[in-house]
Amino acid sequence: MSEQEELKLFEKIEKGLSKSFENLLHRKAALGQDMVFADENGQPRIVSARKTLEEYESKQIQ
Image (cartoon, rainbow, N blue to C red; front, side, top):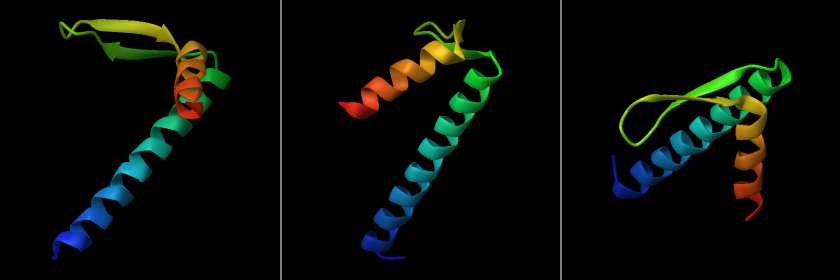
């Protein structure tokens, strides 16, 4: 596989992962559920999916 083909593959994978994460946020926000993330120490942090979606969309606009 050439370097150019690898770059295209990685771009495609990254785009798919981003879309999947966005779909998850929308679905959980619509259901009023929470998201669980790890903080800098690896400890679980629970955040409202609605709040996370708002932050995600505001970063996408910038």
